[in-house]
Every structure is written in C-alpha cells, then in structure tokens.
Length: 387
Image 1 (cartoon, helix red, strand yellow):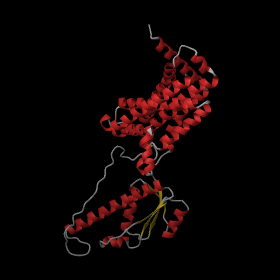
Image 2 (cartoon, one colour):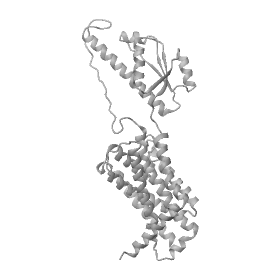
Image 3 (cartoon, one colour):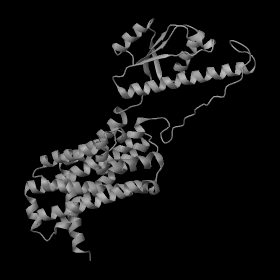
Image 4 (cartoon, helix red, strand yellow):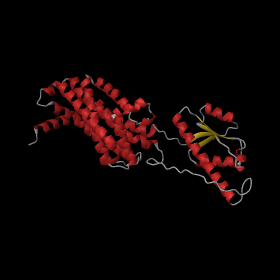
C-alpha cells in the first residue's frame, strides 16, 4: 500500500497540472517566454558583423592599392558600396550613415611600398555603435596586416635573390609572425553565445513566475483555507506545488536544448547528464525564490511584478548579454550573489567547451549552496505563513 503522504502529494501534483493547463494565463507563461527568447536571441540579437557597407576612397590608383581592395573583397566581410573621389566625400557618407566605414588610400601609397618606406592606410569607422565599430576596425586591421605581411615576405625574398628594390643585396631580417586560432566558437557566431544562455533564462523566469502565481492563486480564490483544513501538511503542499514546475523546467531545458542543436546548429561538446544535473541544482534556487515571492504577494498581479523585480537584476548581472569583466568593480562583486551567473557559466561551458565537473565544480558548489539555503529559508517562511 502506498504511503498516504506520497498519495496526497501525487494528488496535489495532478491538480496543479490540470489547473496550470486549464488557465489561459498560465498556458501563455508556459509557452510564450521560451518561444520569444529563442526567436529574439536566435535571430534578432545578432552581434555578428558580416557584409559591412564600406566606402572605398582610392587617391593613389596603383597596382598596390588595387591589391588591398582585392583583399577586402576576398574577405567576404565587407560590401564596397561607394567609391568617393575625396576624403571629404567619404566623411559625408559616414555623417549620413550611408556606410559603416571608409577606407582611404592616400597618394604615394604604391610608391612608398615600392621603395620600402613606411606607409599607412586610413580606416574611418562609424563609432555610434561601439560594438560594431570595434569589430569592423578589427576586421580591417586584420586584412591590412595580412597584406603588409605578404609585402614584407616578398621584399625579403627579393633581397635574398639579389633583386632588391633600391640597392645591393642585404641580409634578410628575421621577423616574428603571429597566427591566431579561436577555440570553442571558431566562426565567432553570436548565436552560439546567446542561445545556450536562453536555457538559464527560461528556467529562471518560468519557474519563478509559475511557482509564485500558482500558490498566490490559491489564496486569491480562497481555496488555500480549504486545503489547510484537509489532512495535507504544509511540507506536502509545498512539494505538491513546486514539483510540477520543476518537471516543467526540466522539460523546457530539454526543448530549448533540442532546438539549439537541431535548428540553430549550436555545437554541444559536453555531457547531457552534466547539464541536467546542474539544472536540478539551479531549480532549487528558482523554486525557493518562487516560494518566497508567494509569501509576500496577495494577488497574481503582485506575484508577477515581484517576479520581474527579482528576475531583472539576476538577468542583467548574469553575464548573459554583458561580459562581467567589463562591468564596474562594485557590479562585479554583486554578480557573486547572482545564482543565474553560475548556471550561465555552466551552460556555456558544457555547450561550447565540453567542460565537466573537474572544471565547473566551483560553479556547481555555489549553485548547491544557494539552492539549499534559499529553498530551506523560503520553505520555512512558507510553512510559517500557513501555520
């Protein structure tokens, strides 16, 4: 015969699922946030800079300047849309936002290269969007640096065989070259960075809101008093109210991960067991916070507003959109109080780096401490309110 306590918890869980799926507002909260976040961060929130519109101002018109232009065309990073006749005209295109950048080849560029003299290429970038400007400047510098290295190699080869540009044979000067290799996200696709983070945001938002609103709904419609006159104990009511949303959270982790892998083609190098195990640790925090919100809210509207009041700081300090190392020092210290930060690091580490417990154990330990502490304190406050 089944334990009566388990039977009562099971009945509450079934009741909670029925109420959640029957309530139109709860159904919206269940399905809308994952869909919106996946669309926004999978498509709209794109920091990739491809086919940037440039103006090409060639004041030299030599073979060397045309070689640089060919390198820009061959990079597949830029679209040369305008060919202004002067630097002033190129500046006007930038002022009117018709281009994102302008490359100016100054007069004497080819002659200086032929004679082995130092020369330069002027790159003007619209800095109103600092992120885009930085990426465009880096791409342009990389292309120009590659052209410079090729010219130096050719000049050294000419000197070695005695075909110097401007004098007798001279010794070849050793030169240090740099070859960079990008790990974990070699194509620098922002989608690979954002979409895994949606897993953390979905669990935090949905489980916080659903848990708080489900309990407050019982108070609002007057059924909480009816539940308390039954043999159900506070701990059984708490488990029956939170376990359904823990299951919903795990289902949504599965769905978002599946969409990330099959639709957005985000690489996954880690362990699914690691991901879901850490999700359970994180759920203790969000369910505990939802219980706490339910004890300070009288209506579902209050619960929803309180949820966003909790969620917004967690979201902004998690490192989801803004690198933590770029935040002010005080904000960086505050991030250590944000459980979402640790789960965000775990999710991205598992997806992109294939990291395991030997690397992510500090984040896992922090989640365990936060989860146990918040869930215990919130459960104690919840039980006290019921008593």
